Length: 456
Ligand SMILES: *Cc1c(COP(=O)(O)O)cnc(C)c1O
Picture (cartoon, rainbow, N blue to C red):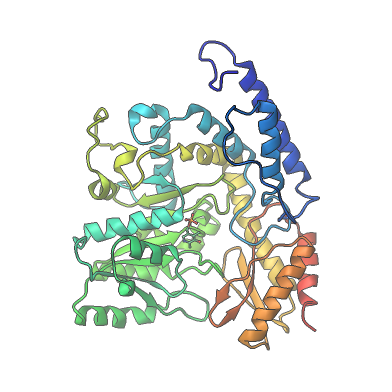
C-alpha cells in the first residue's frame, strides 16, 4: 500500500484508516468513565520500525495499547492538573491541522492559517483590552510564551547584553520563569521574588523598597511578571496596582495568565482581571481550561511591533510580505510551527460566547461547592477566585502533612479520584483543579466525604 494519500482520487485506505481510528477513539472516550484517570499498568508496542512496514490493521492494534495506557482526562475524577478533556471540535481541528500540514513559519506555507492566527490573536487582545496596536503569536505552551515575553522585555529595555539584569515576580510565580533565567543566560539571582500576602498574591507594598535596593546595587530591572492564576491556589496578583507601579517606574509588565487570562473572555469573570489591559504582554493558555487540545498558548503583546523587533532576523528564503505584517517565523522563537490556532479557533466557534462563559463560570462553581463541603475544622483550604484549591490538615506538622498527602492521594486514586500533591510554603497539600466539565456535584460530594474521613 502507498503510505501517502493519492492526490488524484479518493484514497480508500486512508479513508478507512481514519474511520477505524476515529471509531476506536470514540470507544476509548466512551469507556473512560468506567476506567479511572490512570491505568493500573500498561504495555508498550514494539518501538523500532521493522524491516517491513506494519499493516494498517496492526497499526491500529498497536495504537490501542498506547490508548489503553493513557491518562484519561475525561474521567470525572481527573482533577489533578490543568488538563481538561478536549472539546470535540478541537479534536477535529487537530486532525485537520495534521492533514493540511501547513507551516506557520511563513505566509506562503499557510496562507489562510497565518491570517487566521493573526486575527484570532487580535480578537484575544481586544477581549483583554490591550489596545489597537496589539497582536500576538501562538506558541507551543506557556513556558515558551513566558520566555518570549521576557526576551522581548529585556530587548526593548536595551539590556540584552547585561548579564546582571533582573526582573521581578512573586514567590508563587511559575517555574517556567526560572527556566527562562537559565535559557537567557542570566544569573540565578536575576529572578527577584517578591513576597506574597496571606492570599497568595504579590505583596504590592514590598515593591518600592525592592526596586530601590535593585537600583542601589547598580542593577537594571527589565520586567515585572504578575501572575493571573497561580499554580497551587489560583491567586491573581493585584494587576491594577502593579500596572501603576510599572508605569511609574517604566518597567515592562508581563502578565503570566497561563491559568487565569482565559477568564477575560467572559464579561462576568473578566472583572477578576481588572488592570490586565495595562499589560505590555500576556500569556494565555487555552489548553488549560477551555479544552483546546494541547498545545495551545498565545503570547499577546500590546505593541505587536515589539515581537518583530525582538525576533525578526529576516527570512531570506521565503517571499517577503507586502504590508506591515510579518511572517509567523519572525514573531517568536519557533520556526516551523503547526497551525495550533486552528483547533483554538474551531473550539471557540463550537462553544460560542455562551459556551465559553459556561465553562468559566462552572469551573468556579465547582471549586466553590467543593470548598463549602470540606470540613473546615479539619482542613486548611487555600484557594483564590478561580477554579483551584489545595488543602492540608490543620493541626499537622510538615512531616505529618507529607505522610497524610501520600496516603490520601493513593487512597483517593483507588476510588478513582486523582488529585495532585504540591509542596507549598512549608508543607504538602492535596490540590484539586475544577476544570473538568464531566465532574458533577455528586462526584464532588463523594470526594469531600473521602477527604473529610481521611483524618479522624
Ligand atoms: C502551566 C503554566 C505555565 C506554563 O505553561 P506550559 O504550557 O505548561 O508550558 C506558566 N505559568 C503558569 C502560571 C502556569 O500555570
